Length: 456
Image (cartoon, rainbow, N blue to C red; front, side):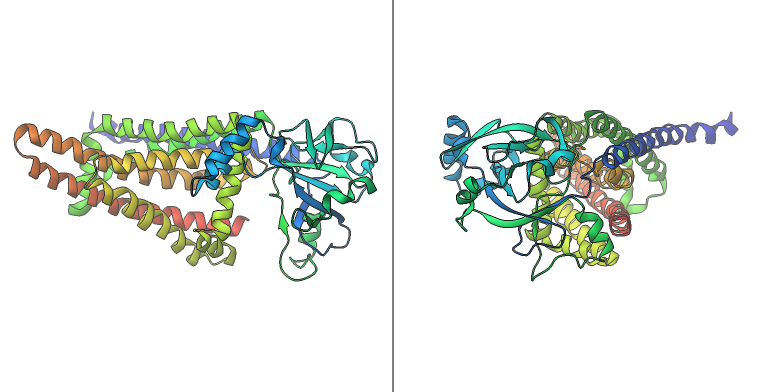
């Protein structure tokens, strides 16, 4: 029977590998379908600048103004007023999809200009208060300065930059709505802008500074979103299976630092499964919620991008924008390991039982919500970023498992009168888990920095 042992040991690897390969195949198929959808859109290269005084050659001038909040239901307006009385509430309102408001864009073009982008309804009649709306625009009618506008058509969801905007062909009757410089900003739109950018080596915008753009992403058809979500679940399952099996095989040779953690992983399989179910349940449950709440998901993604570009995590965004893989790796590792793992997960759990579990449940839920694959580009990006996901998340699973094992050991120690011994044993498990997570997150950070920089 001994010759069969290696084969038996490799069966779990084969099972995990099959799940991983099937997941990646689903993601590549979703990316292929996404490319077909995007290539079929005449305005696939559209960019919309909403704060740019200078207009590039070939672009159409516009003026942008937020639609007044008075168009929201009275209950929503009252809720906004109460929330804004609380410091820091604006970020919550953005995540709920209540803020910011849609923009009305007065475009210096005739109604026929929008014909290639129209997917339903009809074009506006020139000079009438009729607009075209993006897929996530909430209004069928709205009022601005005493004029009631009606949405008469919708633009194709995959077109980038249009999801939360309404488009009004310019006419003398509407110029006064955009005369106040505090309410409106100048800008432009160009259906061929991305192609111009690629052809100009990045020197496409005249004047000083950079324009402020509507986020250049569209919405994917539901079938592609479902296929991408299914692929991510298979990759997560296969990646977890492979990594946990590998760690169990390494347990006998792990040494004094990693040995207690890996031995505990092997001994408490029910707890390990429970931690996986809770954390990945939060991740994919949030993704499912994101599918049902597309506008909130859109704003959460927009908010996250702003945090990484100019907010508290702007140093990470700058590291990736620099193209320096080492800098990007170190910036990622600092945030994921030193801050997210050591400071916010492991250390609080030494005093407050299960603190790391609750923190990571929130983190997995937020990551899942932001990563909901609703938008153009998400299927293609996940063909390689899904590997980053499983590498990083399994590191957090290991640490979460360890911080759960500590209070379980202490409780049993109280029952046997050996709580101090059990606490020290649990502490060694956490130390080993933190060290192991450092190794796993380093591998993930190198992979993430390399792929995001080289493949973007």
